[in-house]
Length: 369
Image (cartoon, rainbow, N blue to C red; front, side, top):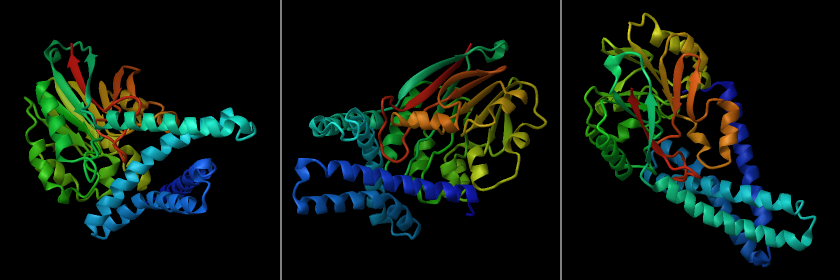
């Protein structure tokens, strides 16, 4: 799959930042008296280096079909991403308080304190990431009385693969069925792998009970692992895949869906997904499923009544949500964009580490009144 130059530059910058974060962590931790002996420093540095390289190596080996060892590396690396981020944030706060070691009398104490706080928050983040997603309730007010009472459940960003699998999906499906929805929508990033290898998950999706069907769109991760392979996973799971098209549920309701709008930029695709999905629209309340909350104002101008998105995870681990907002002004929550309602979920699963801080994953319950 051909990436644009912009994406290649972004990936290089990301790897550079990753190297800096690991280096900063090592530099600060090795300054503690606990690591006075040279042998301990060498062993600890080797362990951190292994953690730092494991995720990238795991992804490379997965593509080379070395699946067993690759899964171990990928899980190890994913866990390290979350753990390192939390530790670096609070060690940096400790450095700010000590003016980066200027106040020598408090520097060591503050760094030990930062490590203690980071350890506690890391455990809490694992708890939030691994627990059953909570139900977030939304009410959408409509003028069409025929839509009153309609119940939609939205899930997004499950990221099923090496880390999240059958047990997690079964919990999600059980919770969905408990809510008794008329319609279920899945706004992308269902799988983090080649869908042809995840056949065991299809039957679990088929257990979702609705009155009017399950509808989904591709996220950026479906594209990364093969946009030509993964659509079949949706259809074989009982999910109606909306690829830049719409479907008339009844005379009062239309659901449209677009391929991930951020991936369009990543792969230098010039096609106008939104125009293709919404052209020649019929009368009725129009819901748009879009994995990334992009082209929001344009969707409103084109007559969309309700737009449902995910993708941003609300940063997943604080304070990464501030960086997420830099790229996605509509990052998480409920917005009114002109005449359109916009609901962006922080996601049902997790990408990378199975960690969330401070909020857990969510299933969105939307009641029309």
